[in-house]
Structures are given as C-alpha cells and as structure tokens.
Image 1 (cartoon, rainbow, N blue to C red):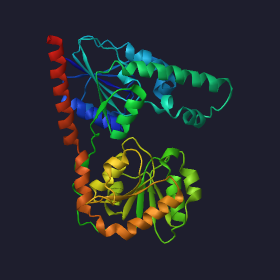
Image 2: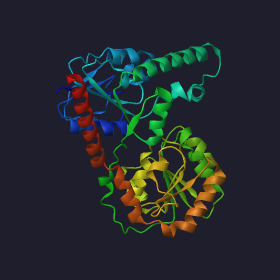
Image 3: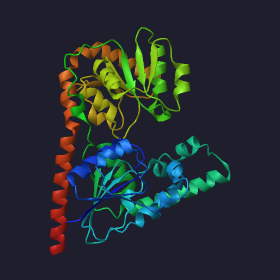
Image 4: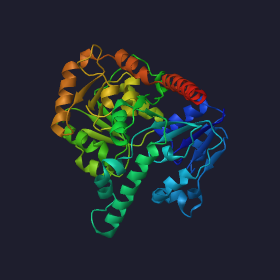
Length: 381
C-alpha cells in the first residue's frame, strides 16, 4: 500500500510538526508533501534524510521569507499535487493541506487542528491585526478571505474521515464543515519530564510560558499580579507584545524572555502553579506543566477544559476562571491558594499521561486500520 502524508508547510518546529514526526514513524515508507520546505537544518535532522516534495510556491522569488504572503496561491498549490498512485492520503492540516484532490479509490484521513479562523469566525480580528480596517486593501483582503472560506468548505468535502485534536475543535468542524470528527488528542512529550523528581521542592512563584502575542492575554495575567504585590510571577517567552507587557509589569513580575529547554523545564517543575489565560484549540503548555506535577490555573474555555481537572473532580489538577479579566484571574489565584492542598503532583502527572505520544500512536494507528478495513469492504461490495 502506498501512503502520502500532506503537511501544510515546513518553516518552524511546533506542535503540528511533532505530530508529523510521529506520523512518519508510524508510516516510515510514506511520501511527504508540503507547500514549502524552509526548515532549519537542525530540525531537518528529525526527518533522517527523507525526500520532501514541495509545490511551485517554493520557487517564487523571496518565498523563503514571505511565503505566507502567497497564501491565495496555496489552494492551487495543494490541488496540483499528483496523489493518484496512493491508496491512503493523510493530511495534517490547519489551513490548506486537506484540499488535496483524491479519487473514489483513495482514502483521505485529515488531522484537523482547526478550521481556519481567519476565514470563518475571526476574520475582522485578523484584518485589524494586519492594519486593514478600511479602504481598497481592506475590501480586497476581505474578498480573498471570503473566496478562501468557500474553497475551504468545498475542500472539506474531499475528506473521508476527520480527526480533531480536541472536542472543542470537533464542534468547530461540525459547525463550519457540517462533518463529524473523531477526537484524538495531539501528542505531548511527556517522557521529556520523566527526569524531574516528584519530590522537587515547590517555590512560591507563579509561572506562565507563552509567545507574547495578543490572544494569549499575558497582559491580563501581569495586570492581575499588579494587584497581588506579595506574589511573584515569572513570564517566560518573547514576542511582539514584550514592550507593552514590560510597561504593565510591577516589581513582583519578572520577564525572563526566551530560555533554554532545561531552564524552562526547571521552572515548570518548581512553580507553585502555572497560569494560562488563552482560549486555545488544545493547549500544550498546561499539559507540560501537569507532566511536571505542577497545578494549572486556566481559563475555562477551549481545549483547557479537556486537559485540566477542576476542583469539582475527585483528583483535581487545577482551578478554572470563567472570564478573560483581571478580576477573574485574581479570584482564581486566591481560590487556588485556599484549595492547593487538594491538588497533588501525582494527580497532575497521571492526568498528563493521557496525552503521551504512545497514546496518540496507538489511537491513530487503530483508526487508520479500522478506516482502511471499512473503505476496502465498501469497494468490494
């Protein structure tokens, strides 16, 4: 059986690339397709010299630095991949990869991270972030996104089986594409934290780790601690919001910037609690904190409500707050301090193991096996 794996694009190593690496382990003879490949050599080593097939977009001048600006060409790029010789096609998609063309004698399984928010439910926010709020460029961009939304809906119809990374995303797939999806949580490198001692003494500081971008709402966490001057907060990460967050930070807030993995892991393992204020599709950071035995204080929206056990559970691993406001975060910190004795490191670690890489491997391999058996049975009938 010939297998093709279609990935969005390769320029950095993040969550979807970690999933891709596991897919290539599961299907070592699969051929890999992607819109562009500009991955750093250090990250490329993870693919062990595998040949990667790319689209015409990689050949466009300045594509290495600006390939995202050719987004309007990406649907055409993935549709031009010739996958006719493959029985199984697996797309690893948050934008266009699911739009590859397959025929009736091919099974297409899509791992979907989310229907593209800039086309479906956050279009105006994305345009405003790009500085497009009025004028000809605004109307042109808005028209392009509307055309993409239509294409995206049509592309979703080409998928035989959807896999969602959370129940939250499965609901969005049903709402946007009118398709059902099986939930298989993405893999988190739980083994990376196995060396952290369960008896590592807890410090008094609170911790958040994130790219400093607006939707992560690190500004709210920092402002909350301005009203809690006797508590210490450490913020790990960098990004375009750094200057703004630095201006909001009080004397009890330390902006640590970008740290090495070892430095970051030591903070994760010794923090009093990890704070998470974003509405994420899944959210790896809270799971990593729990893998270190660290409780989480999180917004009760998005994937977090699936990865954290609140105080209403028998073995809680964290505390939820209901609104993205300073007052809500402050209240949650105080609730945590009153209830911290109920949250154990053992419970946090046990909960995190639900998202280990071997769980993803087993569940996805089982899904492919069952889907192929059903697909072949229909062809014979």
